[in-house]
Length: 197
Length: 336
Image (cartoon, rainbow over all chains, first blue to last red; front, side, top):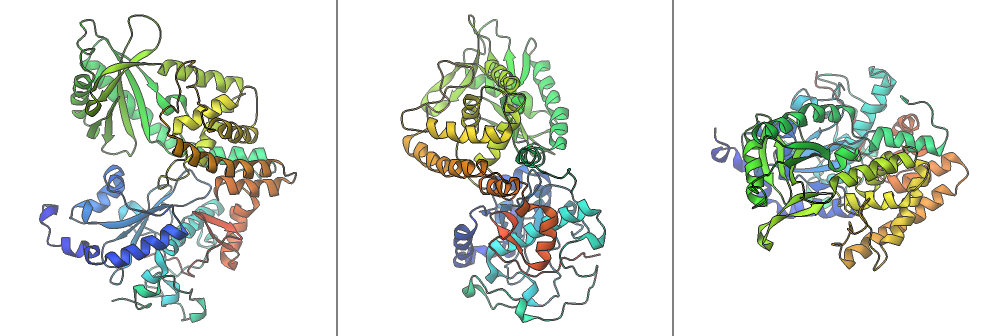
């Protein structure tokens, strides 16, 4: 179907009624980590894998809301992209790493294995990102993930080489609830603090 | 980890240049496959042309990733057809390039036809040029319709290439990799503005170096030179030229802003270079170049332990021991 005529467009354009939220997210990011930037249309057009991923949504690219930020490490460049296909209270953002090796098992099979499995979706809230954490913590989580991938790869790539906690593959048992792990929220006005759905 | 252990600051610079500043081999391999095809398409349609690689790709001074490949195409213009209009010439080249199967879309800029590719993120800039009737240099298109320019201006891209080659030889092979290192400082990420225009930074380093040197010495020399050359009223000549300045369009406010940032980096660079202990010096260079610079605080083995214990935290766009921001205690997962 012609993207302009897609009936899914309003769902992708959730952000048109959430300007206070996106403004709060961006203001917080600007103060804390100015390397975070709203996802430019040019990047969606010029990066072939990202272009194909976004084309798969079936809507015009300007309907798609997202952010991009770099990850520093012993590599030339790692660009991270967080795409909010739906309102963040309804669906976790998809976080992609556009550059570098894609051999890690801690990735989703779509997007040419560029989408990172940052956390187990059924883990308790203190072990997942939610919108009150702000964009910086989302990208920090992704930066930690690509650093962990690098370390694991250099060590040999076995499961034991993964340097941070991980859930077993597939349908895993959720981690035990441990509220002491919860970080103080950065943007308390943005949500219920817990889980959507 | 993959590299041999780093024991000196210069080895840290070499590792930083090799692993972070240098364009990945696969990007260069892609470029080597693509640009000859577009060059051939243009020369097939416009017989008698010659062409060569130019710009930072030609000088091998692009940093971190390949952004564009500049190809100068010197047109054969016996009847003055191209001479008559730079914009018409660019349109003609655009028609040829747009028809190529590799090309997704094209744009015309002041001097070039920019060919954006279907399967690669870098673009190829085809820059038409005319050989002047007398003297050296090349006349490049100047297509600025809203300012009334549709002509050709004398530039010296061949001289710039030669100046870079000569400087690299004179400095014992340090100028080219040193430029890449400085460019990482100048614009560490795509999402932030560059402090200086890329070729301005490159030109300052060109003027800062004269003899055999090291990467660390080159970095310190750059910041000293940049601080002097950004002073009010001072200008920087294009490498190899005695008449043209690289920064004659930089306004005073931007010059002052850049100089403040350079002054800050210069102080940090001198502080790092003055340290005797290599580990402490490397950590001090992290303050200039960010968490990609190899140092005890950014060592992947130390970070692996620190991530588990919580001693490694996020700082800037990376992670370091003793960083600033705590991270969610997430468990990475694999869906299958």
